[in-house]
Amino acid sequence: MHLVQTQMCDALSLGLPEVARALICTGPESQVRAFDAAAGEFTVYGPDDRTKVLTEVGMFLTGLAAEQPFWPGDGLLPPLCQSV
Image (tube, rainbow, N blue to C red):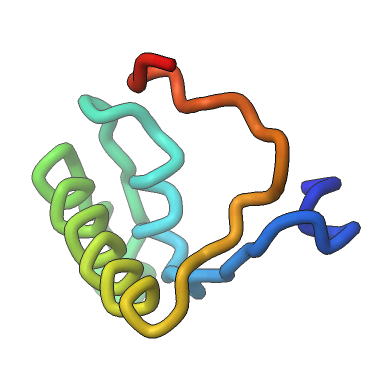
């Protein structure tokens, strides 16, 4: 957050609905329960719903990156999944 606030890297708000945001913030096998006040019942969202949200976010970011590359900041460590 500090890097974004000091303009040392790019940031983007995805503007996700609450359920989509909760699904992304939970683990891949987690469930999110949302109460529908009009129906008086809970809806349970799970791993398949999370995968759909992540796919949509990925497509959105791919389109955005095609327009203008993101600047992650200078001097950052390489991702853990990549060898140096």
